[in-house]
Length: 454
Image (cartoon, rainbow, N blue to C red; front, side, top):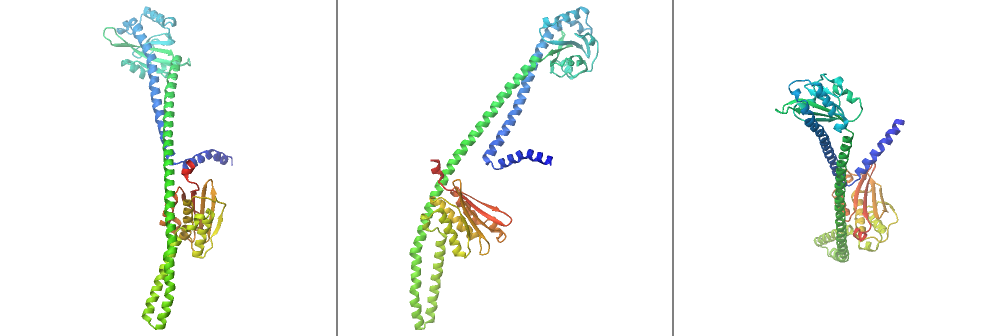
């Protein structure tokens, strides 16, 4: 029980972060990924530069100790170039030059190596002892100054290690004056408190510079993204406004076409059908079966033409929605479907704004009518719901999944065309499926985005 509660509390932030990431737009995901990559790259570079500068600081301190050994110590022990021992007089001289008042450096240990033997040290107990070779001494025998800080891991370093202080260990080669041959090594152990402070200061400067660079580049990246998004939103707003105006022009034109069809061809075809009745009666009295058959063919053709014209006009948006509210527009679309199929559509239309732009009403009308026609039949229950949500109109049509064909549930060409029309005026059309039902929802902004921005 306790483990479950702890796991839930520990995993909840992760789930929240995952949900937030999933709902983040693609451009911000790309910017976040680029920022993380940039920070990791700069952190690696900062670490590399800081380590290199720290080594340079250590080398600078080591160079001072090596210079002292080469200029002061080497001339005093030139005799060891021919023999591996020091006279008592030379040892006393070495003791004097390594006095704290003379050297003016915090050196706690000094040794002179010939091979793996210590021939001199300020600690007499190690003089004459032999120790195993070390990598630092090998580097010094090859002519390089070897320096390490807090790396006292050799057997000969035990006395210095017991001090529990930061120690800089330096091995400097000592050369013969005439031949330049390396005949001995000078080892110094120096308290490195000041050195560590300088290394820390250098690293802080490096990390501060790279942190400022990372923050600056990340800010520039997000500022550029924000500017690009703002320009994209402005372009999208202008495009939606233009699409709405084009939609309004097209729908007005189609309404005029529908009105002209009603007042023109429909009336003329209806008149022709009325005029055929006296002709048919007259031919029946004359007893001309061939002519009667021709008249019936004409009548049948006129009936078909009239039905097709009426069917065509029914697919167009009626002109009277110009004077209707949005709720009345939705209701008239549902009632047209009811008259066509004879099936009642349950409706739940909340209080909607009275004044709505014509492109919005036209799009909602098409969505309701075309969706009901495409996915509803005479046996399945049908439910229509419409409401306002933060300046958006949402229209939802719910149908029975079990009685739907697979192509209608997943969508078809009618859905693709309807989605294009909804998205062209800034709306969104999406489908939600459950075990028993499929819900088609259109979400459209009520006001013109260009007017809102103004």
